[in-house]
Image 1 (tube, helix red, strand yellow):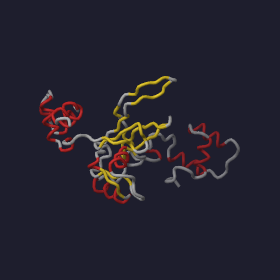
Image 2 (cartoon, rainbow, N blue to C red):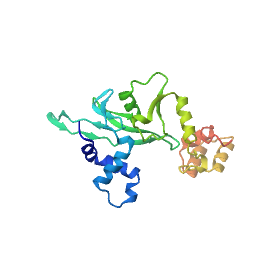
Image 3 (cartoon, rainbow, N blue to C red):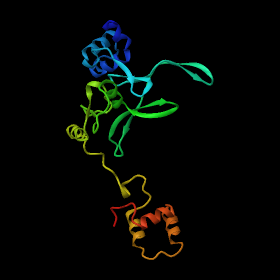
Image 4 (tube, rainbow, N blue to C red):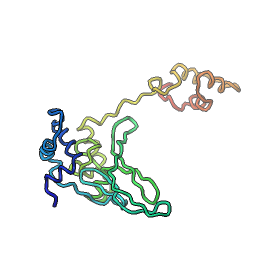
Length: 233
């Protein structure tokens, strides 16, 4: 077993991250190895060795109990020749809902030449807890989707997730702007009302309105038929 001191010195990126969380970065302009080590040892989340397990369904990847995902070192055939692939920690990205609320960290995994976009919290739970039970989904205890450590995750129901969002104050989405409030809208409410007020549509009128308003004739027809701008009667 690697001694604790060597373990934390080798994991320098984790030490700096922990020291920052403990305030060591703000306390001193220069972080020494000793400062980082003390901060890391004081951080309960880094008090044990990081455990890695195979990602379920993706033999070329591993996931850790701290929510990190990596591709493993291996030999592959590339261009008809044997090539070495080195171990690499995947960066991932934070996926947001339509309303701008962060919902999950996602990593891109490859299998059989195809890309798969997988949520990190599911990879962690499947590897360390087991398959997702019917009717359950991944839940973050602290409401932070970027924190995918095993001690922050559990399988729960959709209602459990909604209760967590209410408890963390993230239940209500970012306001959804519509009509003139939308930054991509090309029409005003007055123009929409004008289009819908027309009762008789002679040939060419639809194309003329499209040119005047800067939208397509198809868009004019959709507004005329009541599609979109539902809040305008």
